[in-house]
Length: 435
Image (tube, rainbow, N blue to C red; front, side):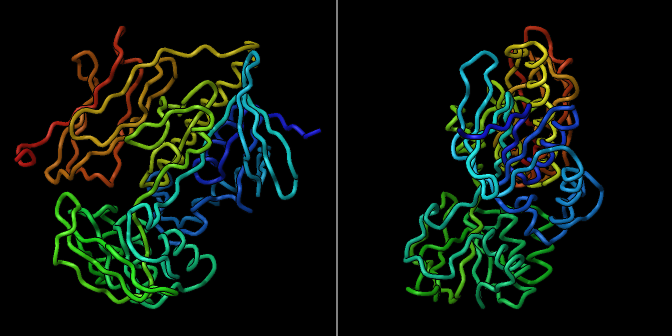
């Protein structure tokens, strides 16, 4: 007979989103179980020894472990049941009245067990793209690393991955590792970016590249890896604005390490197994402002969409935990399935990459936060407005907007007109940007 543990809310993932969700749910009086596959809580923050975390939330420059510790201390001082080194093998929804979810778990200390809750929070984070996902030719010798793995080797294992590195991609982890490897004595030949502009935050471009004299090569990429047992060199080439290699522009770059910072993908295999569809723009489920993605399922953090600030990851985790607990406790009070509120769609107009959430539940109390990214840099700024049925509900002017830097708006659901079925996010550019 398999042991079954019962909770009101089950949170999968003990990173910044999962920690915030578990604490938020527990604060309502819900019984919370937190499942983490690693041996300690904190997620990716454990290996992020650089500062820059917590500026929005705490008004302080914290390292990743310092930021995580503020939440871990609260979890350890609560009655949240934490299951470490525990893997979710499968998940299924019960067809009985009230529904709920059963997770089949495997744990080093607890063996095989089942965990049940009427509400499930997916805080599973994201993963890195590999060299094969960006179609780099050549063998797979030692020395080809994702930026996250390089960070783990240096900051956790104390191992220097090589002597001379090329970094492909200008995402934030890649920029941070360019600086970190330089500080540890490696030579970073340069950062190569396929696009016409960098993909990282402005502060990281300055602090990690410019301050250390590390070259940034825009409209360039790595097309081939050389070496059998170990990387010996890579071939870099210029590309046009469509990403096509310009013939004759190839050049050989000697190195023993290739670090890949070529994008992150929300980790949503479990969400797919539970029947949730994904938004092609975010690669995460479609949700309302509390992370509600389906009957009793809530998604938050980088499993929902890739964030550039951990402060926003925690914010979405808190919203998901609060609403998950509200769902579970309302089922218990009513003795059946909670009735859904009326939802209106959030639609992003021209000029946006995406907007999250995709729906606003008008029955939820408090302001709803809408996160968005633009699809091109607007150095002269723009005005972003939210309208419904031809009426502008709110607007905000930004001095500049860049795709890597996510922005947010807050809307009171009570301001949405009766009978409205859609909210439109609209971008009003200055004339200097329209040319």
